[in-house]
Length: 202
Image (tube, rainbow, N blue to C red; front, side, top):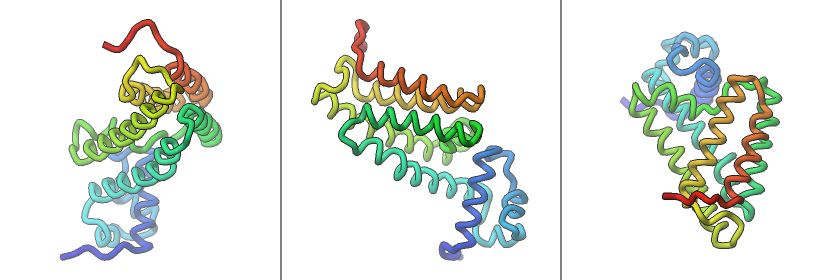
């Protein structure tokens, strides 16, 4: 039997489920929690979604689409990728200052929590980070051709380094309750991108 079409009720479920999963993780979020947040019965919740896994995967899909639109596309579509990255790290510092260094990157949270136990979650998270890396790689390659970035490392290596710095900064900011870590890592990202090293990539 086909599921009901996308409705405001489904939107509400995904919104509340995202909030819960973001703050307390997938495993600790129960169907009872989600139903209570939505002010509906579990039976009504199951009417819209067949399982907690289905809700979790739908939340992840929605968040990935949101990150692609708000973060990756603007970051990789500008003329100056270095300035765009400066803005990314500074924006994160301001965001985490306001929210008390809570929640973090939902996709990264899911990747850490679920990759070893559920391949469906892992594959979606992997595809997200691969797409981010590929987009950054293309931007870095273009910038290298223009002489704006160091050319002694591959665009892919630079992309993976910057993503690792950013996601690592998220972890440290949350752990230490220190949003200024984004500004420190932003400065380091600029150094990695623009200053050549004596040690060339092997």
